[in-house]
Length: 261
Ligand code: NAD
Image (cartoon, rainbow, N blue to C red; front, side, top):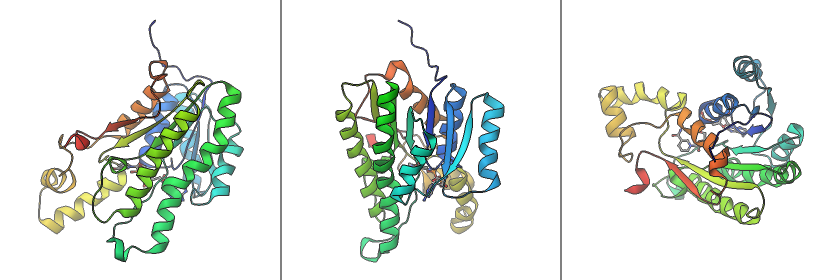
């Protein structure tokens, strides 16, 4: 049997998708034929314009739904408003860096809520929709920091390890259904946010762009190359394919060898 990837007729909800990895995933899913629901906590013209652009360029239906992933009821409301959710990509995430004895409690709470709890709320509402549709994919965007640790990132690492654990449980609860649950664990990905940090770091260390990238940012990424948002999108599309139907409850690292160290 030859495997093909056509997601025509499926609908994907991607949390935190008005920039970076989430937006890259939305584009690749749309190129594979899936209808798209974009999300973030803002409600700007530009947010809705992104959905229009995806729709115009790929021919799928795309819309933007504002919902704050730090709030459980809004996470649930996102899936309810979408009405259909064949592919759920839990991607929304934030970061804060501080030693644990100085870690601000409000930052801890926000990271745990957005990076971990939101995936519980969206999955809880999306699974019955997937069961009704007879097919589903839960794809959680964890991190190399869902498998390893670094200092000063306690909340992020706790949340991402939590997401990896929850992914395994969802996979076991759906193991005998045509639904899979997996986590993608990116290393350092070149997003606009990361790109914007390069000039300042060049100045701070008086280094070339190449040195900043290789010796400051990518110290733990053996490939010495950033992963791209398109690669995150391609991995997501693969997990939605028939070839990946027996891949469930696991993690896929896209990290240039980080977790092999
Ligand atoms: P980003 O800042 O570009 O994207 C984060 C997205 O989450 C944005 O769309 C933002 O609007 C949204 N968001 C933030 N708070 C939200 C809230 N309260 N409600 C709804 N949406 C909210 O960053 P990114 O690098 O694209 O990160 C996306 C995901 O990938 C995150 O979960 C992050 O932890 C993970 N990740 C990123 C990297 C990397 O190197 N960039 C590496 C590993 C994992």
